[in-house]
Image (cartoon, rainbow, N blue to C red; front, side):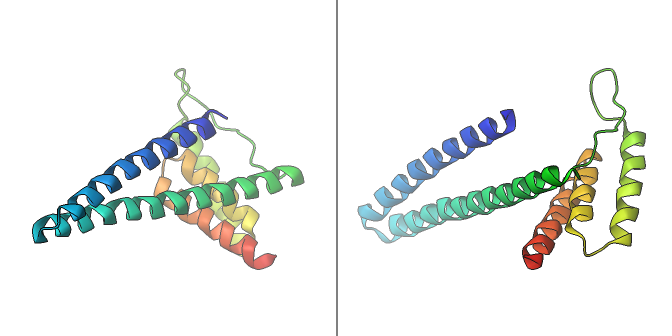
Length: 147
């Protein structure tokens, strides 16, 4: 729940920022000179790119959460079996061991969105966020085509 609240607050702050930046872009365009209009248009493009990125990221998170809920209802969510250091951080060797199992599971069933979901969690636990995101996107794609 804390992650959802943090994400919501961050998204709200970004939207406010985009509105403020956009208003500055409009002010520059209203000044009417070639230079200010050029800068104004450039300044307006940045919030549009930011809003697009925020929308795509929010959509990705919603889809991943939907898969997690479906997998939880089936009883297939990965169990947290990782060893942790006294400070609470995941032990690297433990994460690598679980990752190897998840990777083998995915190689055995490459068209199963559930195995890709569990692989994404293993990548995340191993602190490989880019690959975790790609694996989760693959799980989402496989699930959407299976419907």
